[in-house]
Image (cartoon, rainbow, N blue to C red; front, side, top):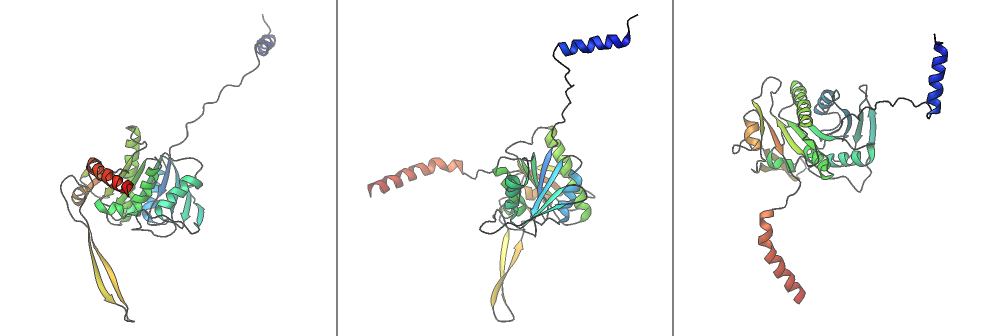
Length: 291
């Protein structure tokens, strides 16, 4: 009968002779899906917290948001002044950055200087109040998402009618499901810029989801003339949002209790006008040369 210890020694010697003992390769886990969160209502806004709570189970999160409210700042940027950043690590382990800057700059700074790697997705919101139609050009929420799209990253802007806490939580749950569906359908890729508007009352009822185009109706603006106690004349802006529009627009869907999903683009070129302007450019160029 062969001695067991002798047999093990022979096998081990054979392994050494054939090139040594090689450790078994460890299986490496794929990097976790990463989302950068931003907004224009400020880092303490309830909509941002609701998003972080809802998405933390499916992604690694980093938050980069303005230190104070920046609503209506559009795609303004912060420059020619120091950009102060405060890093906050909360009990949930998510890293939050409170940044003294416009929403678009918050996103750009996070992508260029604060994050160790590029995120898989950027989400801006949940904004307090809808961002429909022409208002998307004024919105800091949409601008934060658009800034990411400038750099080729997929981005989503999320806005909600009203400001009920239950609605924030329900909207955040919807966004989590949206992200999961986009991932499963492989729609999270460069070029994605999606504007999402959720009607008030989603915690209790909503009529469904519609893919829409941007309404081009211009909101109303009145400027009421007033006089200060010291006799200084000033004007007070009174805003009138667009209440309804043609079927197929984001305003129409939102007004009827539907969540609207509006794919946006970066290129603002009016391509149908290019041919009409080429003769003009040639004529202007020839006259300039003659002079």
